[in-house]
Image (cartoon, rainbow, N blue to C red; front, side):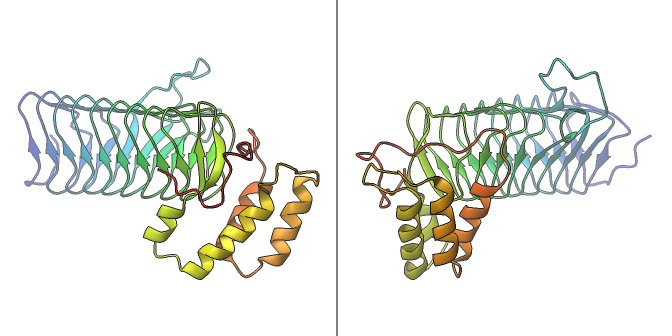
Length: 283
């Protein structure tokens, strides 16, 4: 017999393993399936026809809409049933037909989605992906394994993220955009093949970043990605200049640290001079 709180509500058609751990005020709608190694935090709501399986932990007050699957085996031919995990942070909303797979033993053995995220319909979060807090992933976004998305990033509809790509904090990926390399924190990328067109100024302003700091970031960006069409000096020299001249700007230093970090994919290239603008507002 299960030892679930009396406040748990389970529709008669749902299949919930007795070993599953359910918090207070969990609601499980019709035709849902919850596996034996699943933990549902307080106030989690599964609307209908939701499948949660594997070693999966879903944080408090997560809301999951119909036909979502979470914690199922990854789409990786190397996977042999190892006991890997999937974790969803509190207050995240996951809309219809989203698929989120558990990790692989060859990766980190963990797929993680942060708190206060919104993942819209038909998106796919692959094995070993790590998504930060407050991320918005719009309809039909797909990602390969091992993708990392920083806090507050915005991934617009039908974008495709290559495996091992890193998306920095607060970055913007435009719709129908193929991202094959890393996007710097606060960067804005557009195009059929992603090209960096500026920084995500709208997001920065909405986060309350001061006008003075935004001006600093604008000047640093112009040094890193000059608009003259001539970039004869190597990137390392420009990085060193910005690191020295903008030492007091935490966000600029965050960008530099991201650019200097080890990467499997390299950095997204800048757009052509006619498209590149430090004043780009983003979508």
